[in-house]
Length: 425
Ligand SMILES: *Cc1c(COP(=O)(O)O)cnc(C)c1O
Image (cartoon, rainbow, N blue to C red; front, side, top):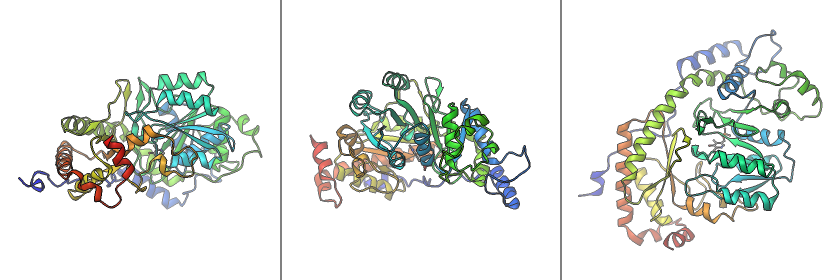
């Protein structure tokens, strides 16, 4: 039988976001009629801008006292570092499996990223964390729950307490997810969320910082560009926290627009339904892929209540060139996968050894080995069981085809020789 006959065409566009709910469209239109797209204004007292309403909802949802909206999660991470006392030259621990804006936020704050290894399960390597905490003397850990993978938070919190490390969580993919019943975003001094199109709530661009620390919250709000209009925030610390800081906090103009907040607000009510649908697809795909020879799905701990907005799997038996082939074949069948092992940074995907501005970027052999064979599939809420079946069939077909090509892969341009050698060891 021809391979091309066994694999169907994938009939879902994984890059297609959900349409805006009608309520978002209505509210945005209403706002546009007023022209008040800037969150601050000399308005009647008691009127609450959409941005302030969104911040209040986030704080309530997470059970945290304060929230500050900004223009991206990357900006929120930068502000969390800056406002928690990180100074230029300070070292900041961060897991090596993360998205480029995360080490970028550390660099933005003038600080020095100290990359920490991750395990085969895509979570932070606790032993390496302890070792690097001691060796570097870093006093901050920026823990990125990359692609929704939540590290053992009991252990992480314990290590941070023991070594006097301030924990900041990157929750770009874990809005509504928990560790052992406790929501992510509630474990550290501050946590940051993303409202970017491919996260759980889509306002195009946007980020939210949450914290219970009055000083951190006041600094973040002032830094974000609130001028002296911080009184128009609802989830904010008391006046006295701002008074203490008057004139000492530069305005970085990282504001959340009222329009973005208007789009985001009605989506909060849709979160549980979206999470349920994505998790159903995740479990379905996971089960199907478990029975495909050569595919290793990432094991999820029982204590992790994740939101399956994407699924990662490893292809440990394949060389870099073969995985490049595999991804290309899937693409031919309409299934767009990402791969963390490509020779060059492509699209959204990169790995530590490609962040050349980071001093210890090339010292994470364990993480590089994982990422060399790690593939990634987005799971939009619109995905159905039939799509999961199609995806599994295409992956099976592409793998068979790739393995059948044997060593041919070595000749493929762009093949990563070092990866090939490593995988063959
Ligand atoms: C998307 C993402 C970010 C950055 O979010 P932006 O809002 O695009 O700045 C940070 N961390 C992770 C893990 C992400 O997935």
